[in-house]
Amino acid sequence: MLTHRAPLLDRRSFLYAGLLGVSALAAGRLFAQDKKQPTKFQIACMTLPYSQFSLERALTGIKNAGYKYVAWGTSHREDGESKPVPVMPVDAAPEKAKDLGKRCRDMGLEPLMMFSGIYPENKLALDVFKSRIKQAAAGGVPQVLTFGHTEGAGSRKLWIERFKELGPIARDHGVLIVIKQHGGETGTGAACAEIIREVNDDAVKLNYDAGNVLDYLRGEIDPIADFRIGRCADLTRSFCIKDHRNFPKSPKEGQDCGPGFGEIDHYKLLAPVAFTGRNLPLCCENIFAPFVPRPKEPEGVDALAKRAREYLEVVVQGLQS
Image 1 (cartoon, one colour):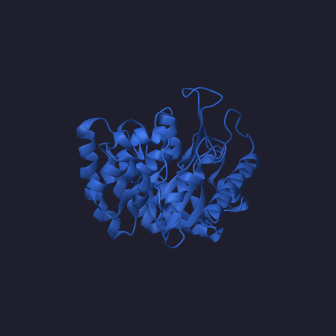
Image 2 (cartoon, rainbow, N blue to C red):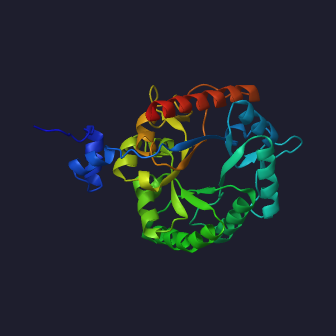
Image 3 (cartoon, rainbow, N blue to C red):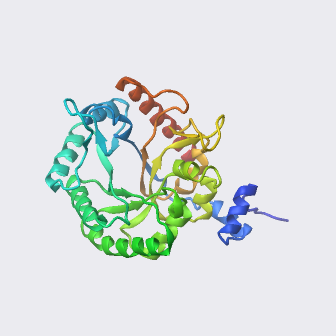
C-alpha cells in the first residue's frame, strides 16, 4: 500500500517540468517542503508607489500604514522641483546613504533594499554597482536589486563575468546583490537561477518577482511552477511583491497590481520558503488595483499600502500556523 504520494502538478506545470528536463517525480518532490525554523518574512513597502509625492511623504505614509520595513525606490516629486529627484543619485557619497538610513530608522523604518538603477550589461555597470555597494553598506541596506534583459550568449556571459567580479566586493561590504526577472532571456526565475548558480558567489542571489513573470511572458509561464520547478527557493533571498491580472482583459492589456488583486496565489508562491529559518524581505513594489485609476492623493496610496501589508500578514500566518 502506498504511504506517500508526491503532490500532483497541473498540466502547465507538468509541461514546464519537461521543458526544464525535470521528471514528474522529481518535480513532485520539489513541491514538498522540509520544515525547519519558520522564515522571518520582513514585509516592506517600497517608496516607489509614492513616486508622485515627496520622499518624506512616502516614508511617513509607509510608517503610518503599519510597516516596520522600507525599500528605497528610484525617484520622487519633491516640492519645488520640476523633475523627479533620485532617492539616491549614482554618484552620491556613501554618507548620503548613511544619512538616509538614519532618517528611516529614526522614523521606525528599517531599510532592506535599494535599486542598482542600471542593467548589468550596461557599459557603466561595474562602476555603478561598486558605487551602489558602498552606498548600501554605509546606509545599512542589506540588498541591492538589479535586473536586465539579456539577449544571446554574449550578454549572458557578460553578466556572469561581471557578477563574479562584483561578488567579492559585495561580500567585503556585507551587501547582497539580488537579481530579479525582467523579460527576455532573464524572464523566468529558472533562467536567473542558472546564472546565479554559474556565478556561484554567496553575495549574488535571487529576488523573485512573480508579477514580472506573469506580465512579461504574457501568461505563457506560470510563476508558481517556474519558482518551484526552477529550483529557485534555495537561492531566493527576497521577493518583489507585485501581482498581475489579465482577466477580464487580454494578456496584452493586463496590468500589474497589488498582492491579492491579481491572479497569483501567494500561498503557493511563498510556501516553499516558509520554513527557511532566514530573514526574507517581501518588498511591495506595486500596491494598486488593476483597471481603475490610481489615487491622486497620498492618503489613497496609504490605504492601499495598508491593505497590501495586511494581506501578506494573513498569508504568512496561514502558511506558518
